[in-house]
Image 1 (spheres, rainbow, N blue to C red):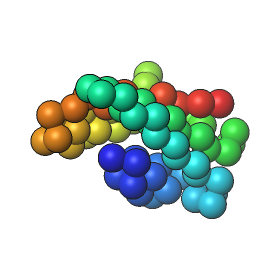
Image 2 (image 1 turned 90 degrees about the vertical axis):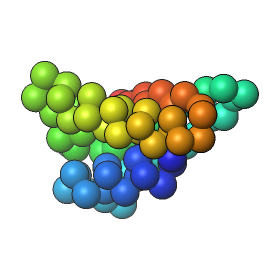
Image 3 (image 1 turned 90 degrees about the horizontal axis):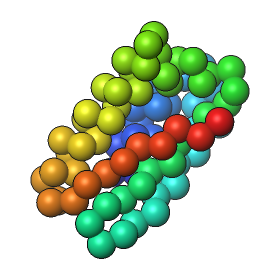
Length: 76
């Protein structure tokens, strides 16, 4: 899951080297934290949060395969 989020985020931003993804795993839920450069934050969130919501949808569909729940947190 972590690699999927990193791949999508690096494709969206101007500074792909500044993308950092960390994963905190629990029994049923994984929290994935995404950090990007301050200038690229708007590109990750998108208009009215649509890009972020799309990333969350893709993540939840991929995590359903593993019978787990994944939550994406975008950290400033």
